[in-house]
Structure formats: structure tokens, C-alpha cells
Image 1 (spheres, helix red, strand yellow):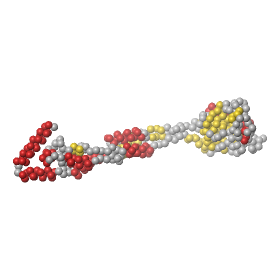
Image 2 (cartoon, helix red, strand yellow):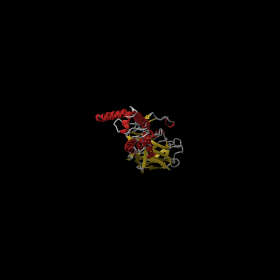
Image 3 (cartoon, one colour):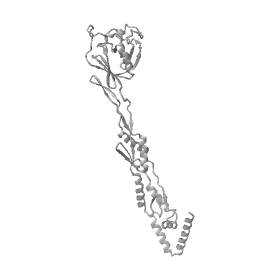
Length: 367
């Protein structure tokens, strides 16, 4: 730096001596030359690292902008599931001040007097303008929106295992896994690509379904008056049952087991049919619910045992599904809480030959 200043001092001194000693016309010509070159930048001028020596404003701006746009408009991308998602810094909201930076270089170039400017325009010097232009950062919300769009497009939803009524039987649909793009990983990959222009390859993660299998389901067919236990999509057990009478029908639809009761206590529901019964009947041989009961999500409806074996097979209950005691005890062990229960109509009500069509059994049968 000291050597450069010495050279400059010698040059300026020599130039002054030359101009002072020269005819007036020579000095005036040098001044005019300086005035003519004010529209161009001195040798060694750099804007954003781009050499703009001896260029006028328009040429300097065009040259710097061309270099800048190579970066701002350079594609950045990631590839997932065979799809390429591409954007640029410009699309993500990045802006620059190339015009202002070039203007600043011209302001710096006009500092000093015509003698020092003559030095800069004649010899590359360390005092030539060096301007670093400013750049706004990309808008994070635009990057997030870009990633969100790609994430949504390549998402494959998982499918839960399902059981549905098919005619008057059950049909099972297996589960399927899904695929999802991790939004954070995608955003990180895009930022890396913005930095170097290289595309990134991304994989989707497997998304497990909430219900992988409907392992257990129950089908009750009124009229047929049988209960079918499905395990892993197949009927594994069949039990005879009693279902509701025409006056107190068993409801149709899809329900589930909401409560399992071991040696249940029967509590009077205060219905028309139970008005003459005690308030409670505890566990024992006369309990209307037998030794096991499974409450359904249908209000007041249960699958339960019964001391009235003769009612099994007929449409004589107060809406509940009655079973032989050994059968309900066996079923109780195989059915978890939450098990879906489908009740369908498979035929007209069935009655005992000695019972009238409006037979409701006796209240002690419990339901």
C-alpha cells in the first residue's frame, strides 16, 4: 500500500509538473479528456465481483445483471417419485440492487479531482471502486409453499383395514400402507440445491395405516337367529341365539362392543316389561344376563347369557342377543372391547310353535 501511494504521489507530481510546465492548451485538453471519461468507470472497477472497467452505465449494469441472473435464475430442484420439482431464487422472492450498486460505483469514481481520476483511468489502482451489492433473502413462506405443494402431490394415503356388510354377510378389505414426503427433508434438499444448483433425490417414507387388520368381528342375523364370529376375515364360530321380538326388535346396523362384564349384575331398566321386577339381581343362577354380558353401542342392547335355554333360536327377547351360557362364556374370551358387531335381517321372525307371534318371553329373561 505504501509503495502504491509513493507511485501515485510521484505520478501526480510528475503530471502536475508536466501540466504546469506545458502550454495551457495541453492542460485544458487533459481536463476535457477527464470530462469525457466521466461516463465510464475507471480501470479495476468491480461490482459484485464483476469487472466493469471502462464501461458506461448501461453496459456495466447489463454485465453485472447477466452475472447475477445466472445465480438467481439458476434452477434448484429435487426429484421424488419420478417427479422433478424446480424453482429459482428469483421465484422464491429474492431481489437485488444491481442498478443501485452500479450507480454507487459511478459516484465513487467521480470522487477527487481530475488529476487523481486521470491516475485511476490510466493505471489499475487499489482505489478503483469495489462495490458489493445487497441481495434480499428468499421468502421462507414461498419456499414452504413450494415444498407443501410437492408434498401434497406425491402423498399416497394409507388405507385402513375395513369390514363392511356385503348382502347379509361381512366382507373384509385389507389395509394398505401409504407414502409421504418429509417436508423438512424436502426443504433442506431445496436449500442445498439453491446453493449449488445440483438436484437432490428424495425418497418417500412409508406411512402405516391406523387399522392394520380387523382381526375380530361379529355378525348377528335375525330371522336366521345365529351369531357368527369372524376371525381374520373368516367365520370360525357359529352360535345359535335369541333375538328381539316384533314388539321389542333387535336394532339393525353396525355397532361395537363397548363394555365386557364378567358375572354381571342386572339393573332394572324400568321398561314396560320390567316394571314388576326387582331393582337389581346380582350374579347367580337366576341372573337374567347369565354369567357374561357384552354391552353394545346400541343403547340397552347386550350380547349375554340366559337361564332361558328354550328361547335360543327364536325371536323372543326384549332386543338383546341371548346365548347359551357355555357359548357366551366361550365367545367372551374371544371378543375384545371395540369389536365391530353387525346386526342384519336375514328373514322373518321365528317363533316357538306353542308361543304367539307377540311372545316377549318373561321379564326375568332380562333383555
